[in-house]
Image (cartoon, rainbow, N blue to C red; front, top):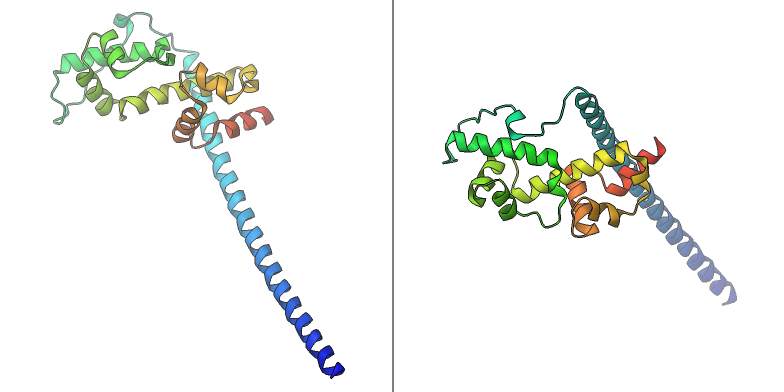
Length: 206
């Protein structure tokens, strides 16, 4: 009887050992899988980061040779591409596009209260015209267009001015016109493909 109990106990211990080995293999396989996913995401992020830096360097070199216009008349005439889906006169489109060019260089997009209506009023046009022109000639809806300008601005600032890399994400969000850190982070990831914290950490190590 005692011998039988010993055999049963040994069998149970052997089964438990098998179970532990199986569990250990599963955990190890899962860890390897998650690590490979993390490594892949890091490679993707780094590739996107390098693309951002490459673009910023090109813009920096270009800006060294281009003076920023101060008056609307200094901006080259933009010839709109005819679009059957937009029922606005070419001269009106051209005027608004010129004013948008000036707006983009004025950093007026950093104001938190900037809206489609307020921008349309400042450009002496109506919101419908402005919305349609931005959609067709900038390739974005107004909010995405505005956020894109803000993210482009803050990435340039972080790239050129190391001191801003020491500021909190909340401050950077407010500085470039976003209502919250969360909205800023979402817009940053959408525009650049990386998170603001990753972008800043990579700038610090370069």
